[in-house]
Length: 308
Image (cartoon, rainbow, N blue to C red; front, side, top):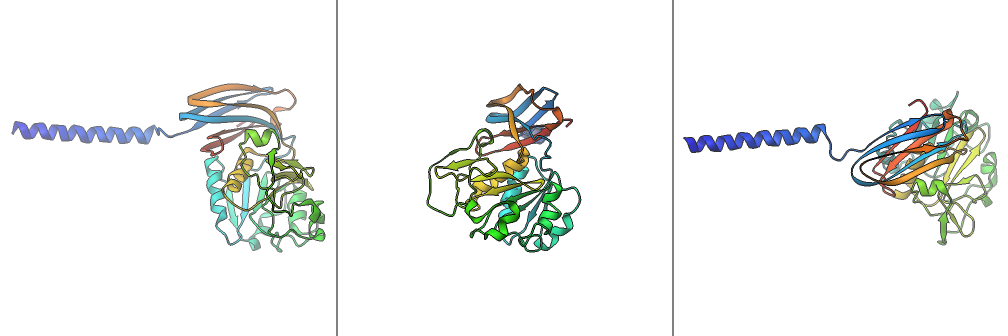
């Protein structure tokens, strides 16, 4: 009897210990990441949490009065590529995503479009919103109202008449698929750990702002340019994991055609990290701070603005 009682006591204790273990996992997730940023008039202080030794980057940007994207509309194109983009955005804390068929897009247009973007994963723009005229909804009801467009380009470059409203011609694009040597375009590429280096169908690097890589022949893999009152981001190459990651990184970070880097901090967070970044050239309301961890394979991201 005493032997049985001893066995039962051990079993009860084991169950209790398992329950405590499960509770501790539930209430204190050992794989959690977190960040907090306070933005002041001339500096931003940050603190980070990571479950283990993790690469981090903290970047402060000046958007010069242009609103970063807060809402993303993805135009469905019959492929499942949008799933990858949504998943990458969620890793970076961006969840305000709407999926829309081409015929539904006009219902989201009109009025102030600043802080909102439409993503076109492939091919020409749907004829419901753009058919080659600056009076079409994509311009008149979107870009003219400060909206943003993310465009993954085409398997065939449109003619000049189709592109003229954007200030582009067919010669603006790289039509040579032969691989070339590329180099990073600048701070944003390095600090956001952008990966897309394919310049096929990318824009000339002297058009807008090259964001990722530039080839020897002078073409950019990702370009941000001003289109009317809005931002247009053109991505070269074929749709893939690098493109989904980079697209999400730019949207989550709040990159616009006017964005410039103010300050940058990087390192390895082992449990926690903290620091301060300074700036003097911008008013606080134009500053955003973006935190991302994991380097080229982001596991966490979050954007902070003045007053958040």
